[in-house]
Amino acid sequence: MSATTVEVQQFRPVQHRVTFGGLVRSEWIKFWSVRSVVVTMLASVVATVGIGVLFSLAARTALTSGPPEAQAGVNGFAFNMMGAQFASLVVAALGVIIIAGEFSTGMVRTSFVTAPGRVGVLAAKAVVLAANVLVLQGLAVFVSFFLGQAVLNTRDLGVSIGDDHVLRALVGTIVTIVGVALIGLAVGALLRNSAGAIVTVVAALFVVPPLLGLVPDSWGGDKINEFFLTNTVANFGTLTASPAYLEIGPGIAAFAGWIVLLGALAVLTLKSRDV
Image 1 (cartoon, helix red, strand yellow):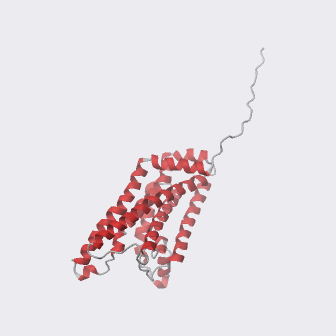
Image 2: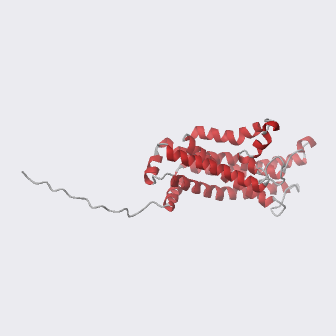
Image 3: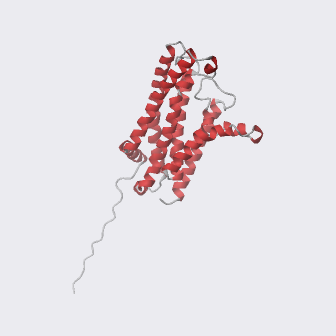
């Protein structure tokens, strides 16, 4: 009979803790390592600049050679920013992809094992997404503006960045795009399915608002229209404010409220549901 020696392992405290900065660096690497994300990001820039210039050409034609009925309602600046509206759709899908895509591939399990609190992962994704969309779409919006206004100025139809409300409208356009991207991220975390989340966001941003105009004011249709998602900042990204929408300050507050509400629901979902 021989004695068995059992080696007792000494407890070793964790030497490297996961910090929020580390999560942000990790999400930054993942963001630019996924081909579909890079392609989607570049597509949003092309949409903002390319479509913006094309619509500026169309606006110039309508305002200079079109019949009077075709000129009615043509706003050179609004046409110039049409590309940014298409880019909003693209970045919303991007927000969905970076979180719902991880659920579909199972990679989110690794992320949650690294950061069991889960909230830090979602917050890091939000920071990385907002920073990249802010920088790239900020540049794209200004490039689209200067190119589009150069097209319109060939017929003396453009505006200058120093004119009243122009810089504010450009900033409003960029802020709206960043907010839409964060809404896409929150919806993606809530539904965990890329196709379903993208359809939901597209319907909420582009299908529901026109339908709200059909709701009678006696049923609160005017208030619902004012406070619904991006309608809240409709006057932030335009040169001429419309009385049908909220003023700029309250509109920004309401838009931020939507983002916080959806983000809070996404956090609650991540904390309460298994992967």
